[in-house]
Length: 468
Ligand code: 6PG
Image 1: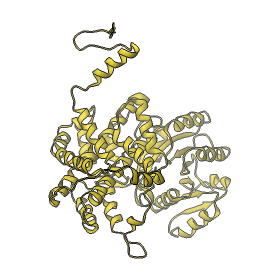
Image 2: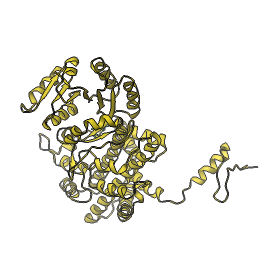
Image 3: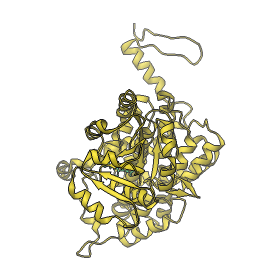
């Protein structure tokens, strides 16, 4: 009794694999799931040299874990988290720790923190990224909230996390729901990059008519360059994969994209904070657009554009596509990181963006070599308003912008949708515009609604009688 180091509630893909990871680091781990099949399959899978137990009985589960207990919830976000907490509470003692490892909406974490503190239970949210493989062999973990509770469990988390240059991809991020918020923005960036890669793939295939072997090879090659990242790597592997009939599996997959909501939350909250994240917005919109498949099929026959063939030079095109992707990925990270900066002030998280970039370098879905560049930028200037203002990043963008301008012109001429690429460039062009035409918007607002405006040549608030 009370000998296990760690308990996990929810033995789905993430829970099971994290538990196996924890046990392989020589911690005794016990899992709880109401589904007896999940419990018995974990017991079968467990390495006999590791200390693993699994049960469907919450009382037995609580009795097995040493006090103060450390229990991580890996159940779907929302009501299941509340139900899991309610079922645990009668069996817990003051000082026990509950960690929510799911993709929980940050305000739910704030609420649960208050409810559980009142009962003497330490609670914190910790975003976990890396999917099945990450959970089993080293995820990136984003803890926030109760720092003392995190410190007690730090040795376990550091042992199971992915490592980059021997540094674990887990570090305390900040107050309250900081961990869930950072994971939400991680996912927003993930949506953006996935959309950008899919647009580049579409341009290669439908636009420039590159053959599929070439496309597959390009992604493999790009992963050896400054584009090196998990999402580029898996794209190469996906394009390679054949189905049981020897056909490329990608061509048999429906284009109807699903989502669980974290990208939408990122966009929604960015709007609340008035932080522009247009590439992430476009990625959410394009997943929604993909759902209207029956309408698109009809529209494809009604809304027509006769594009003209354009002479292309393949090696030049491939170089432009690469620059376009690099440029747009950088500006997507810039948007997400800018959102984190504002959110940190607004919600009093106390985030250090160098730390965020550091723990995103490995284990997570958006891990990429460029994260090291961003880490350095924040190390040099922790108050950097936007990574686009870092001199090294600015030169990289200045050098690669020609590619994206060419690619977008081509896409427009060919009628190929590139909402992600266009919004990345629009973000860059707007951000570097010392003057925007929003003076006209101010004038219009004042014209029809007497909303007033400010002048550049005099202090104060002005209103004009625009017509006699
Ligand atoms: C990760 C992933 C993970 C999950 C996404 C999928 O970091 O490991 O982001 O959290 O796969 O939530 O999100 P959608 O279903 O919304 O695409």
